[in-house]
Length: 191
Image 1 (cartoon, rainbow, N blue to C red):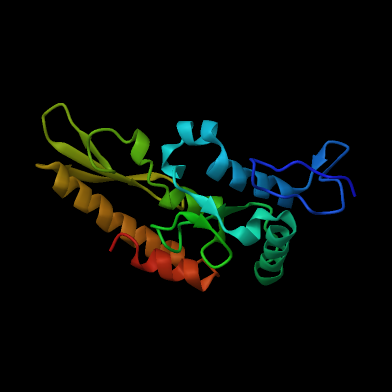
Image 2: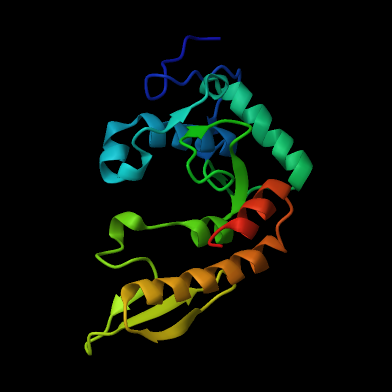
């Protein structure tokens, strides 16, 4: 085996197979590289400041360890081609990618819990100011579509309406999830 350079200055690809063959990339390796990039690429963090301070546990700095965990998840949950690695669905304050803190979630779940705080604007999430000076509230459903929740006097009232509806959707989404950690997290989120 030939010596390989570190990925993002920290990641060791220790597997004895080519991770790209005839233009087809190993899906485990792609996930591993993206995870390292989110934590250790200054260019990525400049464009996505919510990743500042994020790290990867020592175990997962070695590709074979990360690959083993992903394969174990496939055994538990079935095929994971459309699943996304999430570090903070179980614990929203978590900043470390590790086996005990991460989960593989559907794009629907990952999009549903996305905060988008960086691009939200001056009002709380789910709130927009109307031309009459009042505040409207709306909430996107993880099952499709957007629900208008009404017009309110203050942005705080509009946000509370959003939060209440978001909690209802989170509980509905929890009923179709299989990982008990995700079910618990969704059940208490926005309450």
